[in-house]
Image (cartoon, rainbow, N blue to C red; front, side):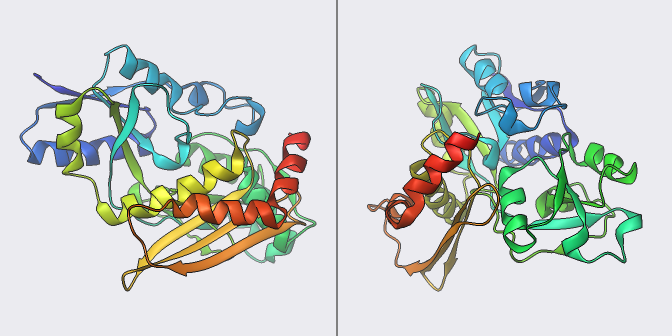
Amino acid sequence: MNKLRIGTRNSPLAMWQAHEVESKLKTLGFETEIVPILSSGDKNLNQPLYALGITGVFTKDLDIALLNNEIDIAVHSFKDVPTQLPNNIQISAVLERDFPEDVLVRNCDSEPLDLEVLKIATSSLRRRAFWLKEFPETEFTDIRGNVQTRLKKLDDGVANATLFSLAGIKRMNLDVHYEQIPFMLQAPSQGVVAIASLSDNSKLNETLKSISHKETEICVTIEREFLKTLEGGCTAPIGAKAEILNNQIRFLGRLCSLDGKKCIETDEIFEWNGSENFGEKIALKVLENGGKELMEEIKKSL
């Protein structure tokens, strides 16, 4: 292999992620080339993601480039990656998670306003539902685009405030005032950079393993199995957070109705081992505790 071709979306945050992966590969002696690819999700900024009717809207074009041998690896925000991957594509490595939590960013006119009266700009079903759980009268508007685009729309007055993953702000080193929102349980695998490659490229995949962060890998596997078991291919307001504490895993999970009025939550601590599918087990408990009916209700509403 002459140069390792690194496929990425062409947003500033995605390019930052690709350069992080590139720097790790260069320490292993690889020559690299970054190949920006415009994704379907970046082409249509007028509709909310849930209205586009497809999963993997930010990853599909990179998947195609991988399968067509136009790139050797694809770099993703892991939360954008569907739980069902195309044939012959796998996640071969993840970087260490950083700043996964959601935060609130206001425009300058909303500083005196209490949280319950803010007009919030977000196209995320999860963020809307979790916010409505606390503040059921909130008005929302859709917002799409990269971090910088959304900040400009906020300054232009589209809403009083919006919600970001803190990772986006920190990675871009943006001078933005934000507020911690503890009730906003993060999306599964939020704050994690993932590297996808072809499953049959065994030599490359073995190399990629060496830059994967094991603790992050364990946690996001649990979160994504929880998501996969609950959603069954349907977009839904689902939050999940697994973290390793003193050789144990603490797992927080949440499934909410679209209006935030019905929520099923779980908080478990357990000893991890590599042979059990903990995410699936916890999700099955949620489904048995009313989650199945809640998912049916969500599917009918979308």
